[in-house]
Image (tube, rainbow, N blue to C red):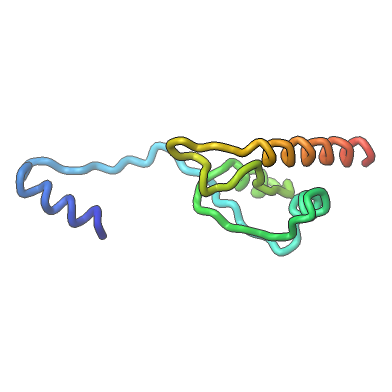
Length: 110
């Protein structure tokens, strides 16, 4: 709605101008599943059973579409990620390294 408002103002000054939208790529959505082997593995390694939905794109939907159990996770908070001055505190990186060790050890044991 706000974009339409700005477009109307813009058209007053540039009456011959237009906006053309061209889709150059799309991603397949990642659906939250009630039962997910990947989520259960990450939960068992981290002790965190929360499931959050966020509005950004990943390749996760591609893996899910071909039947691979998929989870999106990483260090830090989405509140600080993918924006100016993003950061990850050192403790979060340590947790991530522990998670990766847990995944490796789980994979070797299987």
